[in-house]
Image (cartoon, rainbow, N blue to C red; front, top):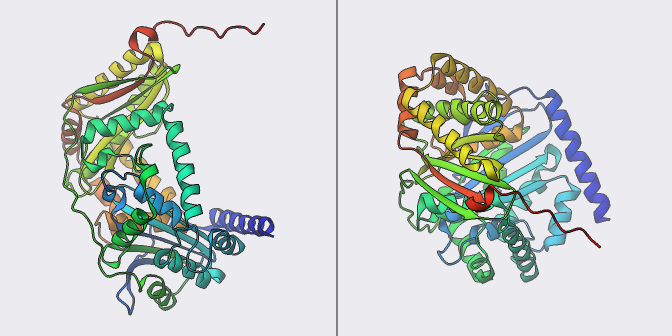
Length: 453
């Protein structure tokens, strides 16, 4: 019976997704409303009846930065368990209810936020919001579910010990943030996760899930009055105030600095970065544009041209700005043959320095602006994507009409501002973490495996 319900749920959800992709126009020009319920719950809302779907994204301040120092991974365990049974419904019954109605409910722990996501067909909205209410107000945290989730997390952490990408990221965060909470992986570690108790899980949830830090975004086929009633019912019984530990601001370690992690793998992974910018920095958009020019993930970026097309050192290379409540980071990644790792990092370093010294050209700036304006249309073409974006804009403390203003903000960046942003980001060089075979072994070929007799 559960198997058939699951198949039905997947089929319905897939059908709705396909209809949405075929018929839903971009929401980039959508009018965002500010909704305040009779109970005082505030949300940003876009009403759209193109398809009979409602998407809600919401977040509570806190996240993995609120993990106790010797219990890293607590937020991740809480997020993994909140949809594993609630109220009178154990894990199997809770999930069967979701699957029977094609309801998608999930939680995840980020550095600064505990985020939730809810998606449903319009006809199932009452049941969907009620399941979210149960998960938020009365999660069960049953012992068998805790141990099952803990086993899954530990299995993933053990795999990471031989994964060069995971090792590079962990080491880079340690180098960048020292003993600040941002240096710790949101997933925890093999020492701390086994120690997390049910009391730790309940205490974290009770401290974090409260109305004063709650942000909500809803997009879909529902009128404001009906939505207000559902929001009050879902979130109204939560505690008024969270009990958060103060997290200090932190500046990323100043470059240059290089770390090496020995791992006997044929592909060497290189993670590199510099101090970045917080989202409210007045030069953020200029930095965002010059990152696109340098390594923003497109085939036209400077790093892609120099590392892959010109020298054939790697299959891909990319970079991005990461902004948090208490810091900002610019980070990039690539992977190459062990014997070409030094050449690769030297190439990246040289190209970063060239852009810091000279800045971009006017042509590069114009092309980057054009791409970033056009890509927003694709980034907001479904209700779920728009809801996620609206939530992020709220967390970033951007104005409610930011979607309408974004392209003009991009256009307003001058060449001088772009050059200044490049210099600010990259003038001091790079922090880098290299994970792979030891330098003296990198030049030697890997010994062939012995033949079986």
